[in-house]
Length: 274
Ligand code: B12
Ligand code: SF4
Ligand code: SF4
Image 1 (cartoon, rainbow, N blue to C red):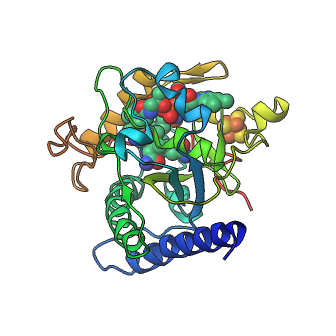
Image 2: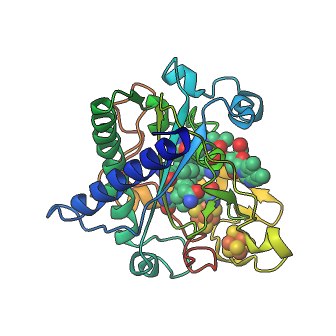
């Protein structure tokens, strides 16, 4: 098989594995969430954008090579939520819907298991996959993680950043990301050139800013502390679905419940796209 065919074959195979896993997972009787069609991208683990992340975010931000010494490709995937789920969270105000909180926890739990499955499948083909343990924790003061899924997903060509601070894919921004570092020997994808946010594209829209209940979003930027205030209010409200982020030890939950809001990713034109 030549290089182009091999790349295309492996990319299709990985996307199929992810889609199949999600479709099987949503049949479980102990969960309620269903997902749209996963979007998958492949980032060059040594892309200049990734290599500059320590300067852009902070010295402590991890590189793919910290996770896997011979890292070559970071698989990034986006699991879209459904419009039905988004609609449950459309009402303005600070309270998220219970469905939104539950989907947040269920998706985070699935991402962990999906990565384990992918690691096993890749091993059967002679490749190694590894997850950054930092991805599921974040500094409670800085409100930053040492592993940004979105920066990896951006480098993998999955989307561009909107005014709502979400990475918006070609099918929209309402959903969650996962990443897996690998030593795959395939051609990477390139960052997406076309701007996905209407405001950034042509100065229109701004709906996300008007929907934000905390004032965290403005046309000029994002205040993560204001946003976290609302997320914590919802965590106190939704303690029944678990709490999937942890302290740096990787086991102690960092919250009493589900730290959610999401009013800026529902009821907006960039939530879902054909
Ligand atoms: C810490 C954290 C939070 C904190 C702080 C939020 C923040 N944005 O910093 C709190 C608890 C407040 C929070 C809130 C939310 N979060 Co949160 N959170 C995280 C977490 C764990 C780490 C993010 C982080 O610190 N990264 C490091 C920072 C520096 O990078 P960054 O956040 O990606 O920010 C960069 C972009 O904004 C980018 N950027 C902005 N504009 C542009 C333009 C260009 C050209 C470029 C190149 C880059 C760029 O540069 C920033 C700085 O480097 C990630 C999971 C993960 N491990 O990645 C989820 C994550 C970011 N959260 C997510 C979501 C959905 C939410 C909420 C909607 C809550 C909810 N589920 O109901 C809100 C949305 C807030 C918002 N509008 O951003 C999703 C985002 C999905 C998406 N479509 O983008 C993530 C990726 C989780 C996931 N698995 O999918 N979150
Ligand atoms: S709601 Fe409009 S302005 Fe906000 S991110 Fe989406 S497209 Fe951009
Ligand atoms: S998650 Fe809520 S508080 Fe945070 S930026 Fe979006 S709308 Fe505003």
